[in-house]
Image 1 (cartoon, rainbow, N blue to C red):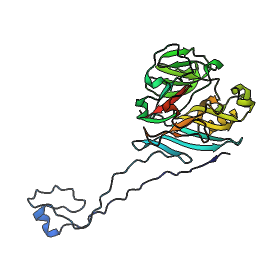
Image 2 (image 1 turned 60 degrees about the vertical axis):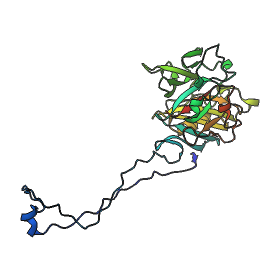
Image 3 (image 1 turned 180 degrees about the vertical axis):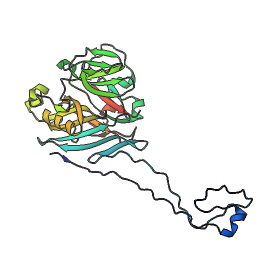
Length: 325
């Protein structure tokens, strides 16, 4: 059983009808003004008299407004035109790990994959500003959040493609964070459902096999060694993961002390159907969110080592930015 914080109920607004005018014109005016009684179907002759007015009060009813789709247990972080773009919550897994979840709502965020100043190697490829080792000025103006990528390329965890440049060949069967030409992102298995037919892929970040697949944890989720070398050989270390739920939302998970099974459990509790582990160990796990598109980034994973402006000044490793469309 998970423990949640910050329960919020949906707010509804009821609109009450205005008061209705009562009473009918005097019968003596029927022939003069051409009034007809209730339910009359006969046509009323025209009249040069002004229409009768009523002294009964009226009520002006304001238009009904649509509230954001707030979900119990999730706390809104950023909104766009009154609709939630990013929300978050923390959970405690059955294993006792505290995991922070950040959800980027489908259709309300566009994603950019960035290279680091040291990893992955670019091979001299000329990349645009929204793929460099620091957030571009355009991204900063509409930033919703950003989070770390996967393992170093030297580990052989998977391929890497950024803005159409394949820096490391993509590997079939690997969990993949895929960004298409519209900026939409998907998480799945390369060569098995991804890319979708006709999808124009521009960036792909792969990392190991899926941590969650078909709404179930990986069969070897209990084998710590299968999910990367940990600092000092300690099993409970900083870990991160990302997944996609049935509605197409992208969910990032980060913790400063967790097992692979904890990360899978947190993603599943958020409704993720396919998920992948990202980087691990305390130096690399970091995420930021903004209170509004283009706002000041704030550290999102409690206890993370890196400062909130790390992606602004630049970072040595790859990361993913989310901006308002």
